[in-house]
Image (cartoon, rainbow, N blue to C red; front, side, top):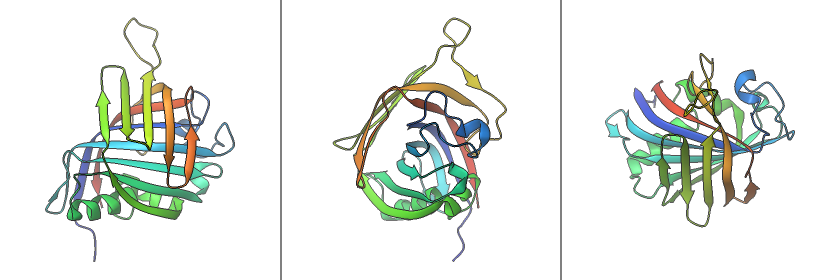
Length: 204
C-alpha cells in the first residue's frame, strides 16, 4: 500500500563523534568522519505534522545511528525511539517517515540503513532556548548542545544556503554533554560536534 501524503515540521538537533565541525554537512556525506566512523543521534520534535489522517503534532523522535565510514556509503545501523505518548497509528507513520520509506527529503535513509534495530517507546524530553538545545531519555540518553558564538555579540555561527537534506540553514554547535546507552551501543560525544535547526518536510 502506498504511503499517503504527509508533512512534518519542527526542531531538530544532532550530536556526533566528529571534531567540531563535522565535515559531513558540507560534503553531503561524502567526506570521511573525523574519527573514521560516525556515531550519532538525531532528534526531531514535531511542532506540526500529519500522515494522511494521522496527526503527528507534538511527537518526538530520536534516531541513534552508526555508520562505518562516509555516511553516503551507507551500511548504517539504526534504531528509533518514539515518545511514550505515541499511538499505534502515529508509530506506524513515524516509523515509515524516519526510516525513509515514506519518501520526502529523508528518503535516502531507506538506502543508507542496512540494519534497523527496531522501535522503542520511552519518555523523551526536549528543551530549547535561544542558543542551546537538549534531549533526554531517562537511563538512555543525556544530551545538551550549545551554539558556537559568532562574530557579532549575541550571535551564533550559521551555515546558510546549504544543499543539506534536513534544512538549508544549520547552527554550528558543540556538545556540552553527550551520553547514550541503548540498542547495544555505548557512546560518549561530550566536547564533539553538534548542530541544530528547523525542518519542514513533505512527502512522498
